[in-house]
Length: 416
Image (tube, rainbow, N blue to C red):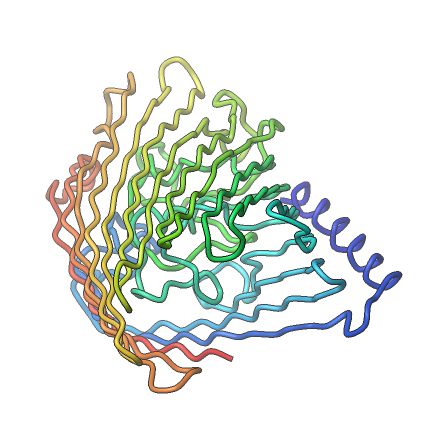
């Protein structure tokens, strides 16, 4: 983590020096935004992954369902140092993370004003890769539901670009016409990416991991390895000292439809360990489409397929594949919004290990949400999520191989 933070500190310091040396009129300027999120949740029966269980949702009852509360607060600061030069930081305070205050994103962005149909921008620091179609709100939240899809839940948990990203944009017809964006990045860290998908599988969890946080593994994993639970790992750690990359693009048609694609590869060496964990060799492709075909109506579709493997020894190697897909429809009428989503997901593992069940799973999920925004700075949301999943790993802890989970939430978000 320290290796990843040092380049960010250098980049921020250089940007601050540039801002001080050549400040234009009205610069520098700091823009502050905040988000307070409070929930009342009726939990499902299955024990949550946050408590070492195999549940697919953020909360879970043990031994049964219960009503619980969740709360967190975020502060987002954007320092405009020069025209086109910004420093962005997202801090979060929340009771379930390892530190009271954690960093979700922190980066420098240089975005010169375009002089024609071509424009470009560069980012350096720690930030989300451009995958999510849902989480385009303040603090990487969704306007549609409280709980994001399985795809974007995993993006929040295990993916963070700690490096540099360049985006080239082409608008031959000017603003409002066709647009083509090409993006590429080189990053460090993310060597733990894939471990949660293998050891726990997919989940629907709206809480992205902070840069200082760790993810807890199901207690079944360390118990099988003759270790005492709880066990956790740092998904953004640098282990094998090999850079990863991603490349992709987005095409926006004149009618407003957006087609996006991204290929991501951490180029992990699955035989390398740092004494705390192994690097996971993980790559995937993501394709998505977003369109607003009628006033207030938004349709989203996204699919992801990839692979991850680890090879600590010839007798314990594991090769896994994963895939997920969702469809979302959302209709807005003034201060009201109604959204529904269908998810399908699965994993498959090939391993010579015969002393445990393979980590194969298949599942689907249904989400319905109704939101009301009586004031510009307040949004109330009622949400229901149902998940059906079949995972062989449950047999190792004497649970039924199939689980049927329901989670109901009442949430209020305050923006400023």
